[in-house]
Figure 1: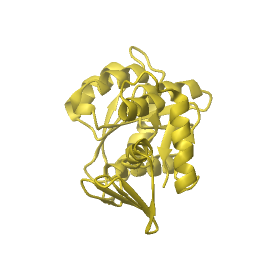
Figure 2: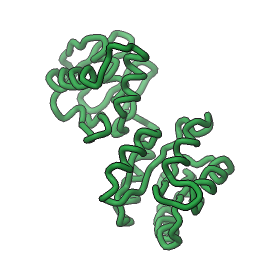
Figure 3: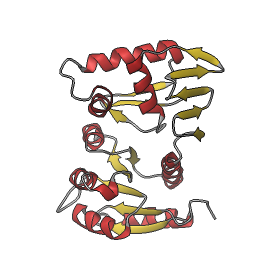
Figure 4: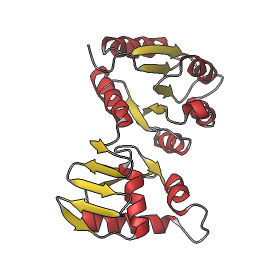
Length: 229
C-alpha cells in the first residue's frame, strides 16, 4: 500500500468512463477518492470532503472547470489545495486560462493511467516542497537558499544575487515544479509597482540562469516559470 494512503482526491468530469478509470487507479494506489460530474457539484463536494488535490476537466455542463477553480481559489479552505486540469492537446489556451485562475498543473488527455498516477504522486509530494526546509532556509539538490542572510550556495560556493533576484528564486524554489504565472510573480515580488513589466521578470530570470545554470528555472510557454532545480 502506498504511503499516499488516506490523502483525499476529488475527480471532476462529466464522462462516467473517465471518472471510473481514474477512480479505480487512484484507489488502487491507496487514495480516498470523491467524484463530481460538473463544476457546481465539484464546489459542493470539495466543501464537504476537503480534498488534498482536485482533478478538474475543463469542458463540463452547468459550470466548467475554469470557473469552479476560480471560485474555490477565493475560499480560504482551498488556498493550499492542489488543482490539476485535464486538457486535450488542442486546448493550449485552456492551460493558460487554468494557470491564470490558480491551477497547479495539468494532465493531457487521452489519460494514461500509470502516467496519471505518477503525476499525481509527484504533485502531492510538493506538500514537502524541498528536501530540507527550515523556516528561513531551503536545501534542494546542490543549492542552499538562506532567506535570512539573503545568500545562495551552489555546491558550497557562494553565489551573489541582487535582492529581487533572490526573492524571485526563493518564491520559485519554495514549491519545486509548481508553475508561477507572470501575474503571480509580479504580485509577490514587485507587489503593485507601476514601473514593472513582463520584461523585468524576463531579465531577472535570465540573470538567475546566468548565475545558477540554465536548468534551474524552466519556462512554461505562454504561462510563466517553474523551479526545476
